[in-house]
Image (tube, rainbow over all chains, first blue to last red; front, side):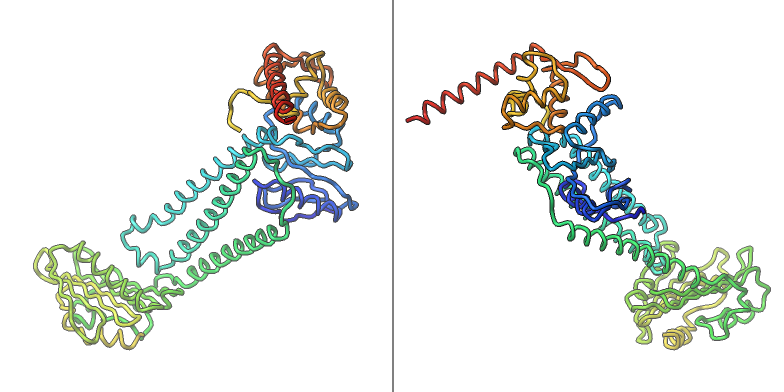
Amino acid sequence: MKKRFLMPDTYWETGLLEQFLEEKAAQGWMPVSFSGYSSGTFEKGTSQALRFRLEPARPETLADREERENVYREMGWQFAAELVDYRVYYAKDPAAPELYTDPATQGWAWDRQLRKLRRDSVLYILLLAFWSVWQFRSLWEKDTPVETFLSGMWTVWLFVVWYFLRGFTKKLRALRGIRRVRRQLEAGIALSHGGDVAASLRRQKRSEVCSWAAIALLMVFMVSLIIGNSSPVELSEAPPRQPWVAMATLDPDTAGMKMDWGQYRERRGLLVPFACQAEQWRWNFGPYWDACFERTALPVFAKALYEERLRRYTEAHPTGTVEILEDPRFDGAALVTSRNANDTGNIQAFMAYKDRAAVYGTITMDADLRDHLDDFAAILADFQ
Amino acid sequence: MAKEPLKILTESMFYVLLSLLGQERCGTEIVQYVDDTTAGRVTLGPGTLYTILAKFVEEKLIEETAVEGRKRTYRITDRGRALFRQELSRLRLCVEDGEREGER
């Protein structure tokens, strides 16, 4: 019978791994193979009192290895399995000499391995940092960090931050351990055997549970995002209770024209429990109308959305007249107005927020959003 | 742990060189020789033995002479003899200092 067991993750501290293997052998489990440093496959047999020792793999030919291991056998040490960059040996005979009897030579044998572990850890941290920063690229690529964050990227970013911190602290711990072992060997002190296996395994189990929980949470959030994002429908199919000032309210004559496009979509999520967007326009520089509404989980999100929209719109329309409205019905409200190329209509945007709700409307038509502040205030009050 | 030429030998290294002074030997013969000579006081673990042999070959203190089946034999080089003599002198001085000062 074969079984997989979690192992102490302190691969720089071989004494702990050796004790773990000895405890497993005492329970009748002999190692067969290992999956990295974190787990191994063991086979059930009879309970044995064995001494296990790990040795860094040597750069040697197959013939050299065969000759060396023959001597090892003659001296009581059998090869058990490869553990990444280590070779695992065990001795049945209590009288067999230790694998390493001279700390100075142990230092030589471990030197290359410890340097490799240190280099790999540093490289891992650098690559992890690069990968983590790369996951945030939409912040500077899209120029809409708040909208991107609230629309669902926060789950990915949260996962990235957690993954980075987990990997970083793990490798930092490894680097500290590697430095400690190097100093010990440089001081001529032999590597110790044993350690707190139970504590190490508890830490390893906690880490595994956290990893799987984080992945499961990420999956749940991703699925809820997909479910919460409805497909666009015709504007005529939008729910009757609408959180926007419709084109027909702004200018009934324009609304009576045949439009080339008219769609509505909803979005639901944890940070934005309800959001919707409606859009209606005609080709060839005809009338354009776009409305967004968000009910966020916290007022700070609504404020951030408002500020981001104001900044983006004023950057896109530098010639527009910006009016910050001091109206007690809004926590913040702004109107940006400019005229179209033919001077036949307004290019106008109104953005506001009140408590947890934010509205945004843009038009290119012969109407003035200023005339509908009461309607916007009513929407923000009704849809909280 | 730094890569620099050997200047001082540990007991295990000293006895490995000593074992090859008189004749060529393979790994198990070296272990046996050290055990006999020191009456079991100095034990050479197999990991220690092969790390020393690899380092000594790299430092050209010893060299492989023959491979018979699974056995490899080694012999000491002139450089190895020189280092052994140097170490022996150092140890003699240590003993002399110890005897002179210790008997006061």
